[in-house]
Length: 129
Image 1 (tube, one colour):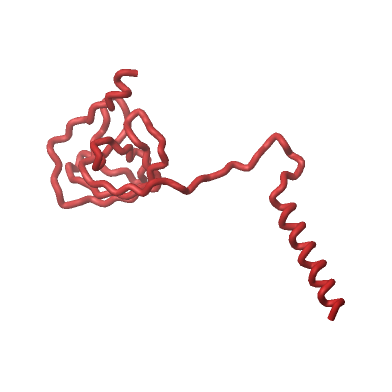
Image 2: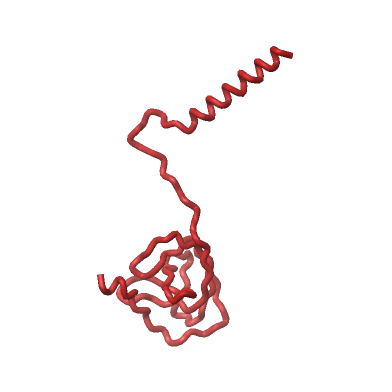
């Protein structure tokens, strides 16, 4: 019985050491693993997609009046259709020249017609600086 306990303790110690060694660098101190954060504020918005003048950005006005940059959506919504969209995405806190950049954008067209297509003006902070 005592032999089994000693063998089990030895096996547990060996496992703990091997797991601890996995987290350490392997001697290559010049490179570190890139961390990827999947955190972000969930965003839900709906509205008309507008291109931003003098850029290739597509934006949707959010509930607080700010703009969400949905240019990274694949496929991108077509503003020339003149139909509003409903979208969900993650706000990672990154500002672009057009507004808050959204990641993992999923969208669908709504049965709501938008006003005539006019480009959205660049945000005031970008115009001043």
